[in-house]
Each structure stands twice: as C-alpha cells, then as structure tokens.
Image (cartoon, rainbow, N blue to C red; front, side, top):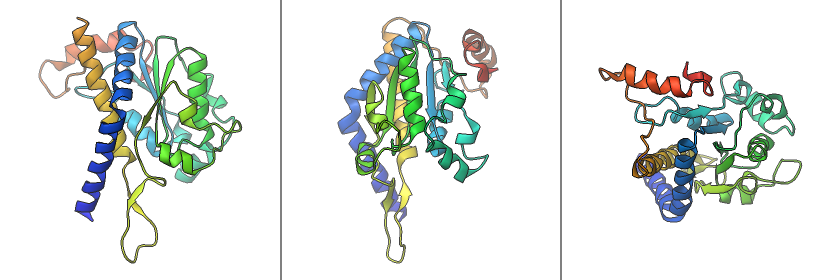
Length: 244
C-alpha cells in the first residue's frame, strides 16, 4: 500500500501540473500584483482544508504577507463532528465574516475539496463583494458528483474568480484493498500544499522580475534572521495580527 499511495499521489500531482499550470500561473501573477500593490494574501478553509492555510503562514522560505483566517469552531480541535456540522450551515459564515478585512488589493484563497458546503461558498462571495480577487482550490470531480448544500445551489467552483482543480477523486480517498470496505488514502492535503507553494514560488519570481524585493521569511534557526524577519513583520503586522 505504501508504494500504491505514492503512485496515486504522483498521479494527482501530474494531473495538476498537466491541467492546472495556466490557472496556477494566473494565480501567481495575481499574488505578485497584490503584494506589489500593498495587499495581502488571505486563506480560508474548514476542517482539514484549514491545514493548508497554516502550511503557508509564517513559513521559512515563504511569503510574509500571508493571513490565514482561523475560525476555531470550523477547525478540528474544538470538536471534529461539530466542525463538519457548522460548515454545512447556511448563514453560519455571517457570525465571523463581519470581522474580516477583505480589501480590493487582496487575493483570497478559499479551499474546499468537495466545494459543496455553504461556509466556504459564503466566504468566497463575501470576499468578492469587497473587491478582493478570489481563488478556489477544489475538486471539480468531487463537486460534480455531489449536490450543493448552499441555499443558492452554488458550489465553490462557481463562486470564485479563478478555479484550481486539485484533481482529488470524489470522497478524496484513492486506495482500496481486499477486506477493507471503504476507500482510504486521501490526497487533497499533499496536493493542495504543493499547489500553494508552487504558486507562491512563481509569484516570488514575478516580483523579482519586476525589480520588487519579495517579502520572504528566513528560517528563525539561521543566525541573523531575527532582524530580517522583524523588519518584514513590522511592515505587515497591522493587517496580520497573527504575526505578533
């Protein structure tokens, strides 16, 4: 099974590279433009999708102006089942969207592999309404296999400005085995992390080509990094309080 999982993960990544390169290049240009214009990059996901918002936040070798939107009841540590139930509730997003600072120069990534639940859809719609450019990372195969739970019938893929398909299968699990009744081996996290890091790497190149110094964290375990990082944190901490 170990080799089978690696094979499936490679296949998903190959599908993304083959089919989503143009979308990822477009996303990178938007990210670079946003940062050069004084905007920030915001990310939102529920359940396991929120892990990807942490993956790219305050990361050695990663961009500084990254703001994960953490809504703790929608994460896993306050109750996993509760998180799933809340994500399915129409209008629940209103309880935290009023506190969000979406601006016209921002790029907002909304991550939901199934793309069918109301909360990610509402976040995407709210960010677009404020003028931010919204990118959805989702599975088109999964979304097309399941009805939307949103009151409008929308999925994430038709609620955003740009879609990047993570090519997860419906249900996300890619492996099967004799004697095991249900599929297993999810791929959305490893693929999603690769998508985001690839986009940000390309955005860094775009900024460098435009003679704009990309704001990148150095590892805190490298001598001399504290001053470098603090100078960048001071630039963005007003809008990204989690950097404090």
